[in-house]
Length: 375
Ligand SMILES: *[C@@H]1O[C@H](CO)[C@@H](O)[C@H](O)[C@H]1NC(C)=O
Ligand SMILES: *[C@@H]1O[C@H](CO)[C@@H](O)[C@H](O)[C@H]1NC(C)=O
Ligand SMILES: *[C@@H]1O[C@H](CO)[C@@H](O)[C@H](O)[C@H]1NC(C)=O
Ligand SMILES: *[C@@H]1O[C@H](CO)[C@@H](O)[C@H](O)[C@H]1NC(C)=O
Image: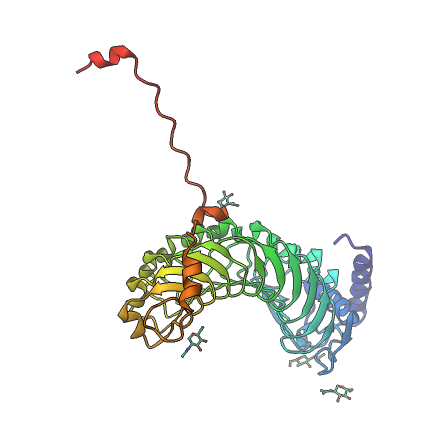
């Protein structure tokens, strides 16, 4: 660690350990580092109404409330701090750089507190971190890029904070299992390399995603289970290969600016239970292939401009087709509103989203005249 004050405090702790041998737990250099980290953290906690950190005193860090120890992965005889869980503690404060000393940490959960500021640069040294949950706090600034350097990360949850700006596309090169970015002010478009991740759950709702749903989402067909993109500013047409996502159970793209038809191929989403496409500008016929999905329990497609639905759609256990342009169905848009909408053709290419199909190869040069002598 380059931080001089850290080196200093570690020096002090080493003298302490030689002077006062702990009676119940044999300490070791890693627990001493953890002690420095946790004391630095306690120092920047400004409010702890439920006394979660009241017992964060002394070298027995494994006894601190919310601190969990386990044998080191690389040395089963060395006990280290492997987990922090301060969920729902209602603590106020910030995260100090010293937390980067907790290099054996696998789990960091501080959801539902009042932490503010940013995620320290030093979090990139937590090379073993699997779960990082700082949701429902008051963090601000750009996406916490330190996490991009943590190859072991599986669960990333930063929802319900005040982050803003770009989400680096490198995030999707991590082998994440679950990603929650919802309820922040991120502004980005889903990158083509989204298919490089191994996500099973992706929740981006209530952000400002300017672009479209990339066709490479279908690369996640072996893992993807739940997709929640509500109110995310998505535009353009749905990729026609969505139907490849045959493990997805919940798919919610409501409250966006999506246009065009629902792809017929979505009938391939064999495990779909909940489908919500409401409050977009989708049009055309609702494909029978979707309503025929045997596991589909709830299909909401209200507040669009669909002009037809096969009878099988109305027989679903739960469905909502209000405010469309479906003749003979109750609670539809006015014929005039529908006529105005259908006066304009939808051009999926106008959004610059679907990767342009490569230009056709230039025609071969005309054969020399002699070629015609061949049979
Ligand atoms: C926390 O500790 C303070 C001081 O010891 C005490 O007055 C307060 O009641 C405690 N709060 C809770 C929620 O236990
Ligand atoms: C830490 O916890 C252990 C096990 O619960 C207990 O035996 C020990 O007295 C505690 N140590 C301190 C310093 O509180
Ligand atoms: C996706 O992953 C591959 C292989 O790891 C890598 O070569 C490629 O650059 C990644 N794509 C993007 C857009 O980062
Ligand atoms: C069906 O889905 C809609 C939209 O997601 C939801 O509001 C409604 O509560 C769901 N109905 C049932 C019975 O789950």
